Length: 107
Image (tube, rainbow, N blue to C red; front, side, top):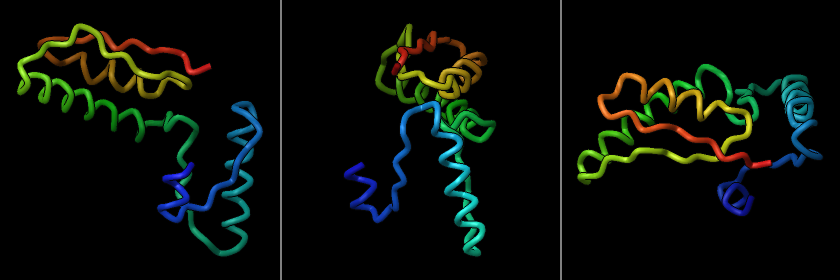
């Protein structure tokens, strides 16, 4: 939150994960009524755009690991909505050395 504020972001804090999407939609509707345009990123970036970012990230991780001379067996990541894990799994699927993406629940 501190970095968001330093960067000038306006924050709307919601009361827990169950209310996050509704809160986000309320903010988006308020901006639209004010004539503003927004780009809604779902919680956890769990949509096609977010998952494809992690597909690309998996390729980058493999390339950087190779350059460092390491071969990870597992890649641990925080998991809430599953978007990151899905993208990494898809990205590692076509790699010769396939690290196993493993999610650790944030809840």
